[in-house]
Length: 488
Image 1 (spheres, rainbow, N blue to C red):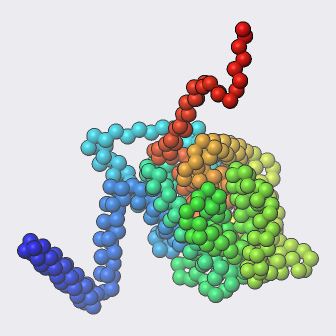
Image 2 (cartoon, rainbow, N blue to C red):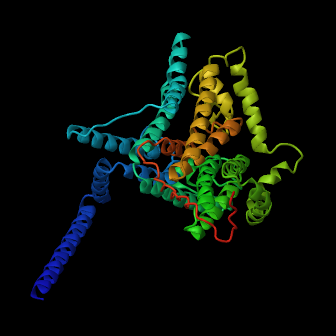
Image 3 (cartoon, helix red, strand yellow):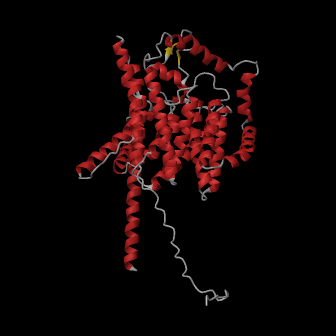
């Protein structure tokens, strides 16, 4: 009894010391902020961030958690707005990757053995990256053209996504960590859906560091914190694939999953983007086909779509109003004009065979806009790397579809769920690249390579299935109710 009293007294004294130190630190920071400036308040955050990087070095999976939790909200900030030359999401990925590599080096010095296994999918990704970077730069030099700094920066995009694929393939090592990654993904996607709905209804709009990327006509479109309704549509559609598979396979957390699925579906409608609605349809078809639920889909797709359209009708009606004049909406007509006047003439004369340059942005001749972006995925491939890059992209799609199909068929755990999400994204890339370069579009491309990396993860063990009990056959017994007939 006396020992317990002493322990309680000691614990109380420790708490008193901690509280006193916390008060002293806060008073010191307040005094320093008054005397020196409020910049000093960033010191505690820098210390906490440094401690977090130490945690990432010791437990690399926290890099995956941090990236999935922050990507939907910082991925839409342009380069140079907060950090020179980089997006905040790119800087975060670089710092997290550096922390993971530092941890790897320390473990190697302590005698831990590291092994790397290269797969066909890995080779396809490397070939795609080479054909989108080294090849177009070499072709420019062969024609006597010096690549600009923008050309060089644009060649890094796919390499960064490949590094993201490697990160998620390596740092996740247990089934519990895979499940946490998917839960973080769904929670962040739900928040993004709410922001997209509020943005499309003009209730809230992302300003501040997102403002520079959201200029233009955004009426009825939910760009939210990714600063692009197309990017939001991709991110939410790929997330919808994950929650849909869980709804079809899991019996626990049904209410939470149904709520998340409903919010994400409304967020997809809230983007006001036709490509987002098409990608959602592709995702549902891919998941339903693999799970053998096409019959149930035919029954429920119509009522669910009608209910969602009714709820999101203010957004849908705004987008459909563009067809009221009998022609194409102004945004579609502007896209066609940009392609026919600024890009197709550059690709003429067989320039599409070997490509032109990595930088696809063209300076606008008008005063009301500064630049013109290439809004076609396949034309982007021809413009950057010509036929070699198009072939590399199709080869990557083929290997990706083969890989995800095999993983989804051979496994029944959360790695298979990620594989189905990546497979649905691959089909979206195949069809929707006709309209936009979804392969490198911020937000959606990041999530796609995260899911693809999880599907290719070789560290997470396969679930051990209990062997079916062997039933021994009963011995042949005489049946007393059957009359025995003797041969005599």
